[in-house]
Length: 105
Length: 105
Figure 1 (tube, each protein chain N blue to C red):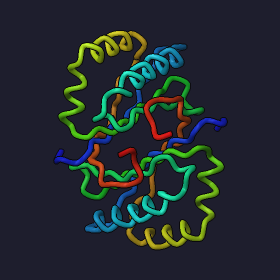
Figure 2 (figure 1 turned 30 degrees about the vertical axis):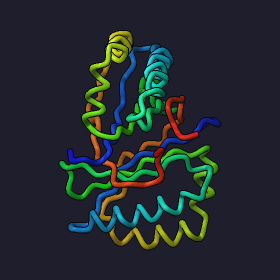
Figure 3 (figure 1 turned 180 degrees about the horizontal axis):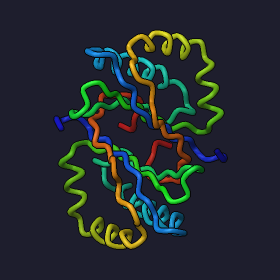
Figure 4 (figure 1 turned 90 degrees about the vertical axis):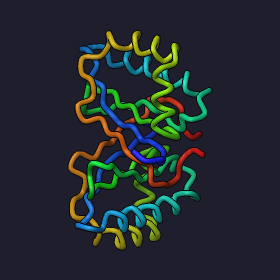
C-alpha cells in the first residue's frame, strides 16, 4: 500500500442469534474511534438479506495508523470481547487505497 | 430497507487500461455530491492487487435520497460519460443499512 488513505471493508459472520450483540460490540469500537483522529470513518452495517452478517467499513489516514490502533490496549480489549460473538471472520476483506471523493476530512 | 441510512459498496471493472480514467470519472461524480447534503460519503478506491477494479463506497440518508440522485440530470450525464469505461458492473454490490458508528453527520 502506498501513502494513500486506507479503506477497509469486510463482513463478519455472527454466531447464530448474536448479530445484534456483535453489532453492538462493534459500535463500542466505533465509539472508541471518535477520539482517534486518524480514523476518518468506522461504520457498522447490516443487510436485510443476511441474518448473521455485520459489515464494518473504515477509512484510515494510513495503514500505519490502522496498525497502531490494533496495538492499543483499548482495541485489544474490544477485540477480545467481540471474538466470542463471531463465527466467521471476513473471507474477502478488502484493503483498498482511497483515490478521493466526498469524505470526512 | 427500513429508514436507516443506506450504505452502498461495489466494485466496477474498468476496460483494459481504463482504470485511471474510470476513477477520474467517478471522482467527478463524487465532486458533484459535495453539494448534495443527503450524500454523506462518496469515496473512490482501488487495490494494488486488482489492476481493473475501482470501488465506490457511499452513505446516503435514505434509499429514497439515493434514488432521487439517480434521477438528477447531472447524475444521468455523469453515468452516461462513465459507462463506456466500464467492462463489468458490480456482481455483488452491497446495499446495507447503517447501524451506526463514526461517520459524517
